[in-house]
Length: 392
Image 1 (tube, rainbow, N blue to C red):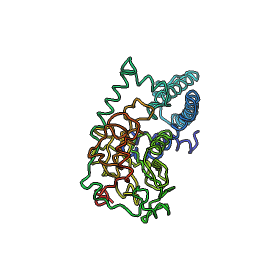
Image 2 (cartoon, rainbow, N blue to C red):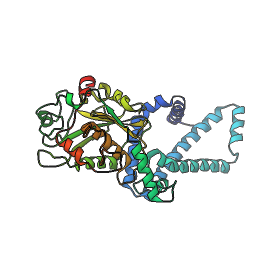
Image 3 (cartoon, one colour):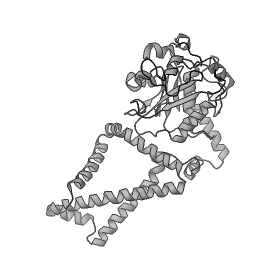
Image 4 (cartoon, rainbow, N blue to C red):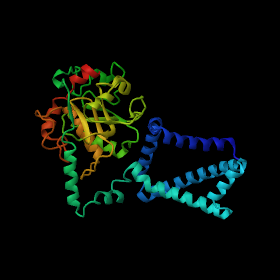
């Protein structure tokens, strides 16, 4: 006889599966925060353990879950069949083997298929297992026998998808009212950085009035992959290494990333994000940013239409496609696109142009800051009069 707790457990699983089939979008929004945490945890484990240890851990964990779920379903199902009528019993006997050994073999085969399917599908759920994963290597070269040809094709495609990714606002940096005094030019008033918060209550953790700080809130659409620890670390390193001068004698920009729900704003946004062009500004709202508006940049991770990403130039909003084609360098594709779009935000037009001829802000696969962009940033991060006057 199944216990009430076992029946409730099985009923909850069946109810969840039914709800996902009937209302995938609504249920996806509800599960997005928890799903993001689980996926991020799995990806963190995948980067921490060797590939063989990660696969073994996933296999054992999945096997334990499968056995527990199968056991509970068997107990509840057995109790239900015993109470069922003769017709239901005949159907059950027809579907499952009659002998105890046959039933055990049937359950074993179902469990094995579940385990194999889970491990096989894992890379498609969480992305590459690692930077040097054989899955990644084989996938990158699957359409060509020459690695150099593959790299050139990726770079050309990459450039084409970044060629038209900027949104020029009606009022640009010239109409932006910069908070003063702002010694380091990062658009954050010195007194705010000293206190670690703005007068409206936006937290500025670890701010430094003598070194440029860039606060970035990342929001994930439903069914997207959170940034991995490696991606976030590389983002901070890329910006810290930029040749931009600071009053304290250092170079670089300190990037502060919030992609959690600690303050109720970063992380899963609770809906699918499909946007391109000016649509990305629709997410830059009080609901999604609160007092952070015009102090924090918002990077949306979702489906970017018509480009790898979009960025306001200048401005505070951008989007990066959740699954961009891999670049041919060591920098992960999403790190490259996020850096590119954030530079649109903080540099605006460089020399009157949306893109530079080289560097991060070009349509090439370059991974350095061009002299022209560095010169503009040395004069201070560009602000947006459009955002300040219309969205904040």
